[in-house]
Length: 426
Image (cartoon, one colour):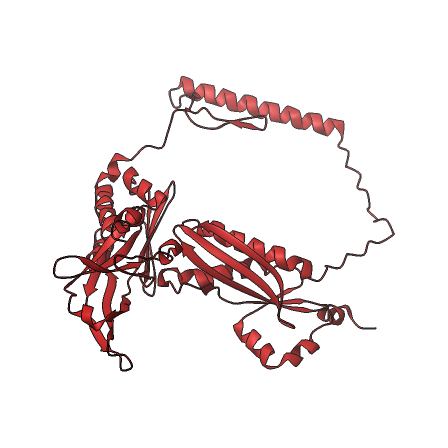
């Protein structure tokens, strides 16, 4: 007969391959979410019975030699968890798909949408969605055998104490208390020691018969600490720049390319470089007494809490409402300042479906925010990404119109004002 350890080693399992989620917009500011979501999935399912976690290398190995699946215990499954995500305004949309590696059949799918500032809630929802899909596919946990015989338990009789011994103990205890009280009275009369009087304490929990109670004031609220006024002024000054004008823009000279197959048209390219202002990051590192700092490559995250700062309400409202998000709009004029070309660099699908009879309208998506905020009741986080975004906007124009190009202008427009800004031009 085989031993129990050998039998358990041949039990069927679910080999779950979890890959980093796909950033379908190739947004550098959202790249960190890719591994974060897959790590959360691993964390949620790692302790489930029958699950064996695998990575990309394991998937490549079994795809190169599919006969390895035949060596797995009978009834085992090979499940591939695929995920992709994108951002629309303040929402992160995640699509999860579970595939059977043996025949590439889709076994389940789930769509999740959550606010960008609530990443922890998003992570939890993604993990639960994967569990819901794979749970019916997992091997059943064997039931423990119940013995038909009752458990034998030896009763222990409590030891009985002699009544005389019990009464003697009580009498001795009473004498000790009387002696202690007599000594305290004598010390008090001699002036060596004063009796301690119990004084009621405010806002201190009271314990009585297994119940705790405390007096409190309903109208008492979290108030701003006056000692944080100096730090708050520094934070307010930095937030003003971060929320209104955080970017440096480098406009480079346009490039022109002739078409060998059609001499009547040319390709025009406008290279532009976006980056965060160096001064902002230097000011935050040198002048702000931040609560915590985390650096990972080009990503720097600053942490602030109410022990050192009072959060200005106007900035909190802007962050919560997401009204700080901006979109770069490129306009090209002729010598009379007439708009000839408009480039709207936005991920919103609405503006990618629009067209114009007045100007050449070119919707793009090359710019991504290099800054993000998260604020709660006690803490605030500011994430900065110190990279250069190399954008190149190109379009085809008739050669006859090239000479009329005279000036280029780039302006950041708030997302809430984008419609009122573009509609008159288009």
